[in-house]
Image 1 (tube, rainbow, N blue to C red):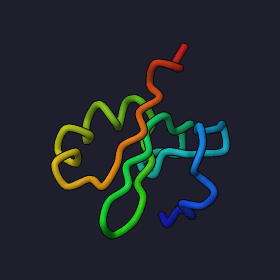
Image 2 (image 1 turned 60 degrees about the vertical axis):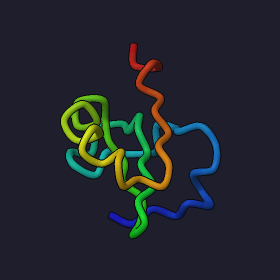
Image 3 (image 1 turned 90 degrees about the horizontal axis):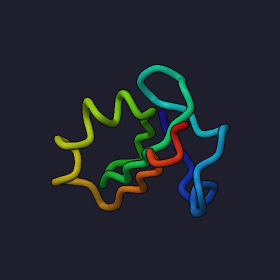
Length: 65
């Protein structure tokens, strides 16, 4: 899923959805080829592998209630 980085300059909102399952995204990973969004569960599963090649990571998992 392609994301417009201009839309995602600030804090993530309920409109940001996980690319893996469609749940609310709390982690945005900018890769050289595009942006990936993850819910807390899928961030836990994939983030460690992606961090090494990520351009930037915005992690807002602390907001999960």
